[in-house]
Image (tube, rainbow, N blue to C red; front, side, top):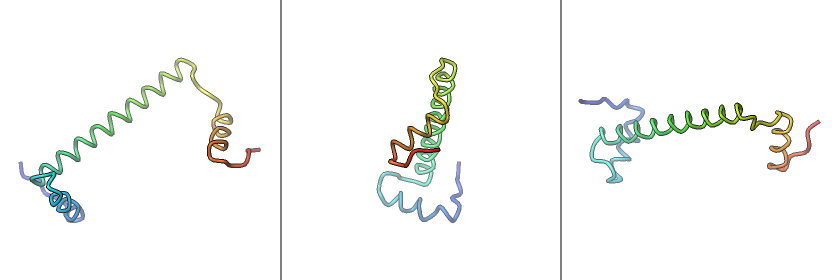
Length: 79
């Protein structure tokens, strides 16, 4: 199946082809689709994990979460 690479992506695809990792535009597109699918699967897994945490009661208040972030990033305490 022939594919059409939009002009704004052509330099990037050409650069990827020059690395020698890909033999054709189709190889580059296939890799991009694999990465997109993996990204989506990881996002969905994270959402499922978060929902399971909520159902199991593994949550903290928003105030506590913000305070943890302030400590982690060395920010002054909130009011």
